Length: 198
Image (tube, rainbow, N blue to C red; front, top):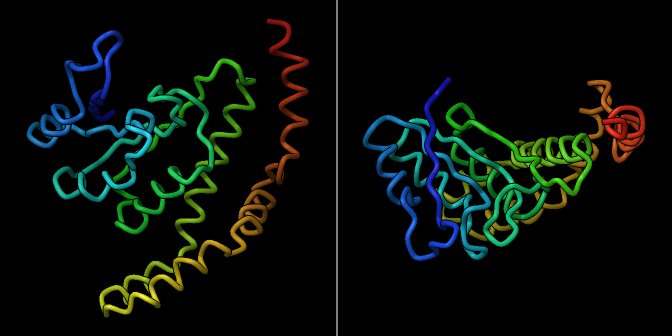
């Protein structure tokens, strides 16, 4: 068990003041040896939670992530493989922080089948991490240090088209996990046989 604290950027009925703001808890964590939590749904839509990872890791030894899908600053929606989540996992890998970052995913969205939400969110996070791990980070870093920005952009762009999906399918196959959307059959069967009777 590790102590983590999470600030808020808003409060119910108190849009201009929230006790326990992001700034307060970030400073408190750094000063008191606590782990700050970045909730990906608690930022302005134009603000990137990924940008905060390498900055915070300069001042705290560990970081906790509450990875969810923001809907108007409300965070508790099923994690998807969207640009924000891809960027978040890429930043962690690029920063060499795999051992310093902890992850929690969110499945709160009550409009979605609970098992389906869990599977969708888990697989989305796995895919984002896989893409980040497959990126040729060492080559990109070397070119960056040499000031060869055209080469950096070339590798970043080519990495986007890598056949990471085939790698993920093979990962699932090797671990006896349904490939692609075939998991839906099991989710639907569980819903029919178990959750519909609750």
